[in-house]
Length: 531
Image (cartoon, rainbow, N blue to C red; front, top):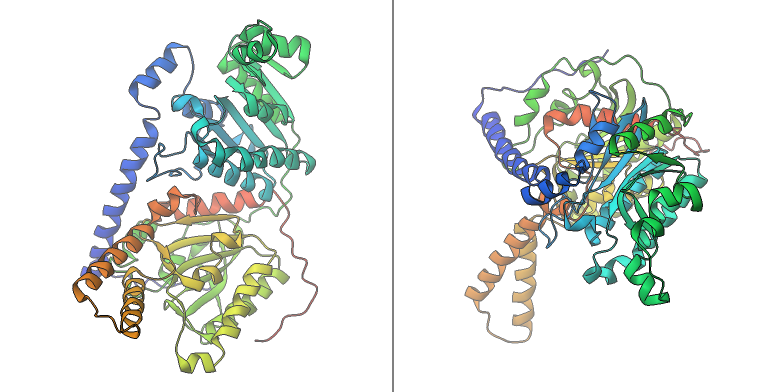
């Protein structure tokens, strides 16, 4: 074993400042979690319960195996928008009858469970996770369909959700729908395209057009039950595969359906897992309050990998990047972590070679982000930084083993790309509350913008208003700082969740377990190039 040593002085002022800053950020996240827990508000939840219905979170809880974890995904979607945080839908990964499943549930206490643009974005991301990782997909449906005032942002891309359900079925990924209420218009195809459908007596309503629309279109007079109730679909149309008496019965049937799926994981089974020898609680203070101050990612690695056991690759070359092999909850993983922020040519070449080896060995990769990007300047341009940075980006782009990204510090510029940012399709991407991501830091970007404006004015022979320029610089810096924060990015569904640093090992273990539902494959047929 190659044990990582503890280099953290938990009594130092720097560490204590880091803890204080992280706790402040976690407190901010907790307030958003409280909004999520409140769902559509006390009155809406009370009205929902008076109808004899469970809340969306209660439905998920009863569906899951008792005392098992639920990894909630994209929880903060729509934060900062005109729509409620969470985007009116709950999604994540949990265990049902011993089977890992992706679960998504409409929250009918929020605008009747209607879908807004953020609902769609979140739903498609969660479906993508099910599809890429070959995980059975369960929909707990109760939706009024599209939020009509935003139909222009939903209708065209919304068809993608139908396509993905069909793709899952084609790929042998089971899909299950439990209908708890209305599932109308386009929403009717969510159960319609599922492999297994469960409907509830007197409660489920599935039809393309409700009674008012049918009357307007055809003159036919009908009611909800005869047009699309559970009894009709179970006895006449054949849409319902299972007929439940109430919500609890529907969830019981859903668990039995999953138990009979005969689903087996195609990836490797984990080895015996042992906890890190260093305290995970100490992850709170490793990242400095000021992200400009560097920190050693080995201190993070030592607190998330099994036994704090880490075999480093090329430790003396390209020291600005840490690469090596470890296990997390028994699953093998290659780790790539920024150590100095800036990525130089040596680091880019080292990472490229490491990615090639990981692909030859069919080992998933974990990227720990804390980078300001690739190095600039005449000396580095002459040294081939564009070539070497492109080489690293190419390797990340064409790597076929699963990737997981965890943003723990800065993630700026093309360095974000080289470290497998969202656009490079990691299986999962999570952030710590300390993280920031943008094209560059707010101060640097503001300086660039004002410098260009000043140069442009001088080139045209116009006077430079320094006060106005400073005002513009300050406003630009604030805008970029606000837009680089985790909640802003999470609101746009650019990550799969903001996590407490102390939960990192658990979240990564759950992610690796989810990935193992499918085979860990690499189609590399060439030898390793020495960079």
